[in-house]
Structure formats: C-alpha cells, structure tokens
Image (cartoon, rainbow, N blue to C red; front, side):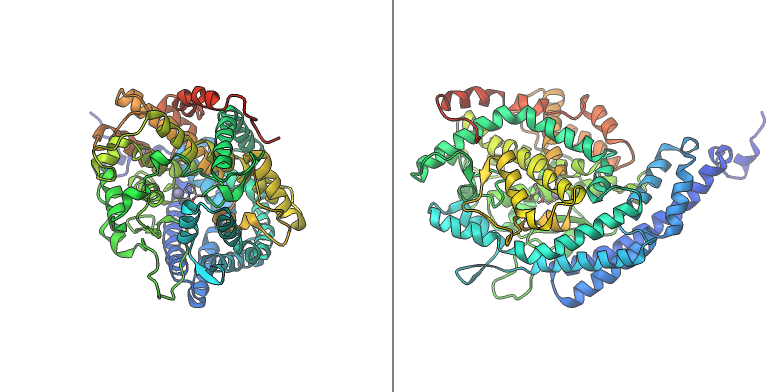
Length: 589
Ligand code: X8Z
Ligand code: ZN
C-alpha cells in the first residue's frame, strides 16, 4: 500500500487538492474574521456603556470605537479583495462565498472609500442614539418613563387622560427629526458607495432580496390576512365605542389602543388579561422563569456573566442615570459575553419580552461553535433571530404552561375562543399590518424615494390609516415626527419587516413542533420540558448564517415561508367573528 506523502507530513489532503483561489480566500478570511470579532467587541462594549449610561464621555467613546471598527470593516483593501475573490465564486466553497458576501455587506455600513461620509455617519448615529436614549417624556410637567406610559395606556379608562398620555408619548419625535433626516442621507450615501440604490435596499440584501421582492412578500402576507384583520378591526371598534360611549368610528382613534403605535392590540379581552396575576412577582422571577423554559428544553443555563453584566431592571427612583428604554440582547464579543438591556417589571408584557430577548441570547449561544466563523454568527436571516424568542413567547402563553409556573392559579378557567381572540389581537394579526405594513412602507419610501422632509408626518399617518385602519386623535402636522417616536426608525433602520416575518415564522415553526414532533393541536400544546423540541431548535440555530434561510426553513418545516400555519391557527376565530360582526360596518373606507 502506498502512503500519500502529504498525509505523512500532516497536511490535510483536501487542502493539498484545493484550488489556489480557495487558499487565498481562506487566508484572507482568517484575518478578516479575527479583526472583525475583536473590533466588534471594542465597539459593542463602548455602545453598551453609551446605551446603559447616557453621558457625553460614553457617547465620545462609542463614536471612536465605531470609527475604529469601520476603519477595519470598511477598509478599501478588504472591499477589493472580497470582490476579486467573489469573481471566482464557482471555485469557492459555499461557506467561503457567504463569508465574502458578508464582508461586503459589513463594509457597506461604513465604506472607508469615503472616510468623511463614514465619520459623519458614525457621529450622527451616536448623537441620535444619545437623544433617543436620554429623552424624558413629561405629563403635566412631571417626568414619565416608557414603562409608565405603557402602564397608563394599559389601565386608563378615561379618554381625556388617554389622549394626554398618547400625546406625551409623541413628544420625542420633533427632537429626533433633524437627526433622522441627516442620517437618511448619510446611510444612503454609505449604501450607494457599495452599489446599493439606497439604505433600505442594503438591509433587504441581507435576505438575498431586492426591495421590490421584499415588499411583494409583505403585501402578499397582508392580502392573505386582510379578511381576518377586517373582522378583528370591526370587533374592536364596536367594543371600544360601546365602552367609551362614542359613535362607532371608521378608523380606530390611536389613543383607544393601549400600544403607543397600535402595533399590538392588548387588553381587549378581559378574561385573558394576565397582568393582575403578576402582582407580587419580583421582576427577577420573570427572567429566571424565562431562562428555565430554555433549560427545560435542554439548553445550557445562560453564562454566569449574563447575570453580572446585564442591565435588566428599571433605573431606581432618584438615580439620575439615563438608559435606553427599549429591550435588546447583545452578543458583545461574538463569543460568551451575552448581555440583555431591559427594564423588566412584573407584568405580562415584560414576561413576553423577556422570553423574546432570551431567544436572541440562546441563538447567540447555539451558533457560537467551531463550525460557524464569526462573520456568520448571525441568524439565518434577521427574522429567524427575532422569531426564535417570539416562538418561545408564543409557547409560554399556553394556559397549562402558565399554571405550571405559578402565573395562573390551578383553578383558572377561560373559554378557548377568548384565548384565540386574544392571541390574534396581541401577538399576530394587527401586528402584521404594522410590521409588514406601515413600518416598511414608510421606510422604503423614506430611504428609497427621497420622501420630502415636509411630508414625513403626512405620509406616516396616511400609511397608518390606509394599512392599519387607525387614525390620530387630532390632525398631526409636520411640527411632529411621529415615525421617529418608534425606536427602530432611529437605531435599527430598515429592519422592522423582520418582526413581521418573525411572526409568520413563529407560527410555522410552532405548527411543525405541535403537529410533527408532539402530535398535538397547535392551539393546545405544551412543549415545556420537551428535549426533542429543544434538540430541533438547537440544530436550527446552530447553523447561524452558514446556509441560505430558504433551505434552512424548508429542511426544518418542510415548507416555504407562508402564512398557512397562522391562518390555520386562527381558522375557528373567523367564523366566530363573522357572527359577532353581522350587520356591522366592516372596514374603514
Ligand atoms: O423591538 C423588539 C424587541 C427587541 S429586538 C423587544 N420587538 C418589536 C417592538 O418592540 O416593536 C419585539 C417585537 C416587536
Ligand atoms: Zn428582538
């Protein structure tokens, strides 16, 4: 028998046979992955400090660290080499091609072919975050936190009071408008430098889609769900008109809905309002309960540093520190330093949000493995990342589960239709018209069609009215900038459709788990503690972004992305609503 000399020398055979261009790409990506990961950590640490303790010194550090990261990720030498190598894509492994494509997507966030533009963008992003995170809302002269706004809107039954709170919640818009306009040009400029028509198109490219393709998906989802949305919209407006002794409106006044943007319609089904059951809970118990759901499925506990380094609870009364009020989860070093920024209080909304954030944390943990290079430590697409925690949050809404962890008493009873109606309103149908409607339609126009500065609010409310069937309590002129009151418009731009897609995804994966793994009805299933479900989710997440999302979804569920599962889930509700709404005026036009 003849020995292969290369093996004797300890050099892997495959490497010996590989085309030289693959060698060149491997060497290049080794350096890029290392630089990317270390600078990501530097920038994330600085941004974490700036988001959890807003002060000029932290803003300055975040700006500098952002520039350091861009100096590497957007370096012209990296761009040239990645492009040249991609010119040989047929000779390269798929994993290599995906990394090279990611190098270019990252470079487009700060292309150092245009250093002035990048410096201006980073400075403007930092300033906008600082304004966003340090803004203090006021009600009758008194400061009001985001949690307090949400609490008042959830509880107040007085329309004049609701109106005041709703109007107060829009106060940060004008403070953010100029910065947003400036950022539009700078973000578009960066995207243009790498050949993308605008910043929206650059973000959508992370799905391997064009803007038109993305918007076509969104419109299709909305068209499919529209009959159910019309029924829900009608049911809610008649209920609320009765409650507030008002004439039945065509579109629903925004301050009748608990959510500041009418994105989720909570609190309309009183039998399924779980807030009272969280009375007496410490916020810590919510986070621990959420972690226990994941460990019950067979996931590892969160790293010890999660508990020491995260910022999980509201700033204590009297403490002057200002921090970002919107929940997030961070993978600071693309390794084990995972932290969450929240302001958890004991209520149903934070119970849900905490499961969502830990979903990100567990996704980070799963794809942090030797087969996933740092450049691809990300979701199969952004909506998979959002969808994982959403899926778990959906699972933890199940009544048997809530009883098992002591949220609901053992003798709690509710009828199935109330639960289904509440699920539709709170976590599914109206949300789709916001997340795949108002938000992306407005942003696609803002970035892609150069929306005039003096029509930003008019266009916003036109979309809200046309797509969501909601209207402002009184006309909102251009002195306001109501779009900018939504966090993501400022600090996570051209991304929000990812949450809509996550909603589609969560019902598909939930349906698969219930029917194919557990052989249960998706509307009455409990997968707490099920290791088979955990293993299924783990292998899906462990791939990170190493494979095309369409393939990952098809392999996992046997389906392409579709509202089929969501529509199936709510099928019994449609007939019930049609009966309730008989003889009523449907729609808002
Ligand atoms: O922004 C979030 C998460 C952070 S990734 C809390 N969500 C969207 C929102 O609050 O508008 C979760 C679902 C929708
Ligand atoms: Zn999220």
